[in-house]
Length: 456
Image (cartoon, rainbow, N blue to C red; front, side, top):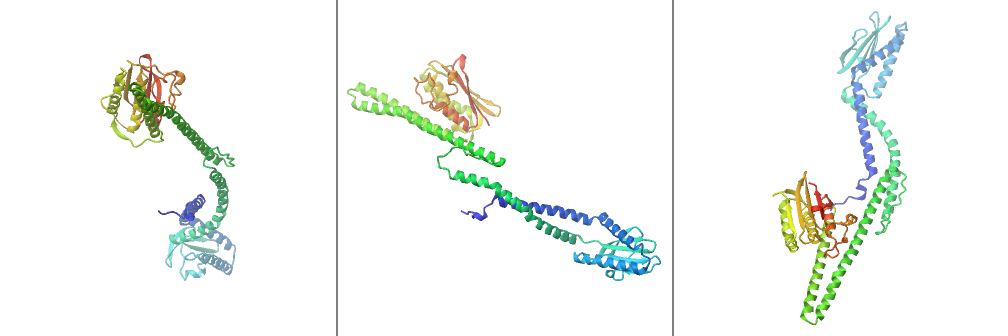
């Protein structure tokens, strides 16, 4: 199985650095687009051409001699094209200075004898030496100045502007990265300390963390860990109580089995032997029933339901009532089913069977002889509703909050065989199915009704 090396594992710091790199690339792309559009904007370029021409015209308009005007034009051309060469701009700025008489006083050497043409105060297009130019002509009292500026190709603009932006961003990147790196490292330090404190704890130490978080963002994490520890403490305490109660409940039938086994072995006559055998069988049956319910409780005590399947719940209920019928007939109980002929529904069948079996067993055991039990089954929206009602002695109001606890038996149920696990199993199975169970009044103003609502 392939495992990543420690240095290759993703880290939060590395992810932040990568996010910052991506952010810089996006910023570079946006600025590149802006500068490219600006450089290709004809109106923007024409305005720069007008401004440059107006500035130069104002410099030479006050000159009276041709040599002075020529010197200014020559100096300007040299300075401007040296700058263009330094930044590798293709082409050159071409200047042409004429006297009002038509005499040419100066032409940029880069023009190589090409005469610049244009109309006064207007900008036109020209192609010279394979390059596109924008040409502007301005006139004063003595001089006529024509300026031609090259229009750079799109590829050159992208590479030139992009390289300049890359240089700026490379300078800015470490300046931005350093404070972010420091902030992340300092921000993660409490997490490292928290992980060390948790790792240093013993396997049985589940007390709350004394987290003094200097950052408000860490408070939810500390609270969530403390809540998890509290749940674990309650779960472990519950399991301890369960084992203790199970051992206590099993001790009685096992003690009876031991006593009756000795009595059976020492019985002086057949009558006492039969009595000992009956008591031994009863104790074994009680222990077997308790063990079966403990196993059923362990299966039902889970966080999620097992794989569900689509079944006819009405037929499933009829089968369970048929299994409970002999015990009900032995106590002369009237057992009824109120359900449609068919009721297809998708659910965890073993969990549903555990619910119905235990509710039926409780009703049969605790309803007086000659009583009545009604099982109803119906669709509740997109879910399912199951109810088991009887007209038995009912459950005292003070005990209704306790009946779903493990090994709890009501004040009126100690003479009836049972382990006190039936309703606890019902509660756990209903929880597995993400449903809810509630207790209400029973039939004929007596007894009780257990209603179970199961979602889709």
